Length: 86
Image (cartoon, rainbow, N blue to C red; front, side, top):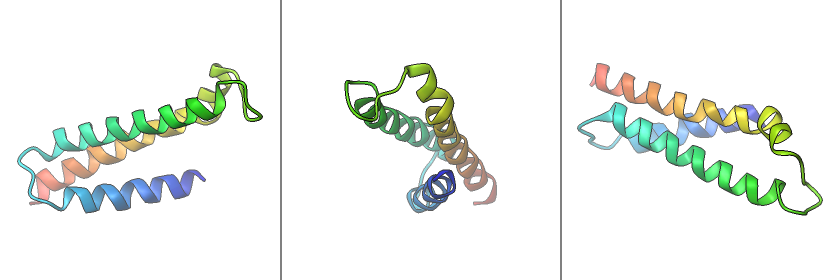
């Protein structure tokens, strides 16, 4: 699942950052943070309330949530590449 998430982050961030952007690193940061917030919000709705998939917040962050940190890292790095090589 992590591999699919990383692939999707690279693919969609590359598509997004192809457009003309004056500050690609800042745009990559904003994109990554927005993506991170959306993912965490959806997961918290599913995992924290009384549901069959319920788990403690600390367990969620150690098993699932921490992997989402890779999304802003990917989008920032792609923004850095864009600013350096275009």
